[in-house]
Length: 360
Image (tube, rainbow, N blue to C red; front, side):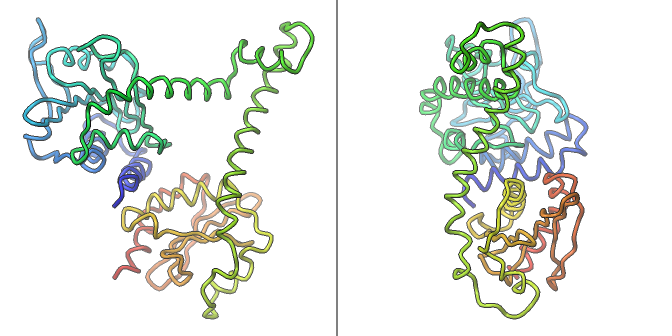
């Protein structure tokens, strides 16, 4: 399994089980330990690699614990503090990490609720943990550009110096990206004024600000959609050629196949659903074996790009109701009503089962 697939499999587990995780201990067991094991590659049951409830005396505070310490070459290298999954992370959650950072050899500290992982180091002052993370990984929305740096903290590819050298760049890029997201969703006066001044010649009054704030927000949203659609069109142009299909065997799957590549419009929602199915399925097989084709009636997802190996179908073309179709061992389809693409995670076991049926 490639590294991105390992991250995707843990992310799929988190998204599937998040609603039933209520306590900090459940968060550790269901989310954090699999992250340490699968994503970082350390044996959570080997005390020479991972120490749970790690204790070190810190000044007058005795017997305080940090949830996990990751060991390399007999030294503490990474500290991890956990909060329950339903609790948003805040800087005051990191007080123990701050104290432990000064009395161990750790250069990396992680604050997490099992869904979001905030990575800290000591860029601002040597041996003192920074107040802002240099890397933030959100398993609800994985930024794959961060994965090469994250991989450098794994057991097999540990390269602390490289991570530290890249940390400042990652920190500022991350903060700028989060600022852009914030401004796109709720633009501040200076942001609105910046754009308004380039298209409006009058004074920037309160009335002008109220006029342009929603315009800036809408323009930003349309710009992002245009960029995404341009990239999707380029990526999909070569995917929907009828000549690339396998010969029909006459069943219902191939009957609808005739509409592949003939005026079919693939939506962002269908691609979001595809990514969710792919994240679930890659716990069983390489993500490279998961393929998709669109038609006028449904969006099909196959194993090995073989229409005789259906994994799921996305019925997203209806005006009001949307469904995901899953398949049993006899390739009988069952449709499940969805409120949103995220509801696909509720049917993760059926999707994995469909994949396993073709591996026997």
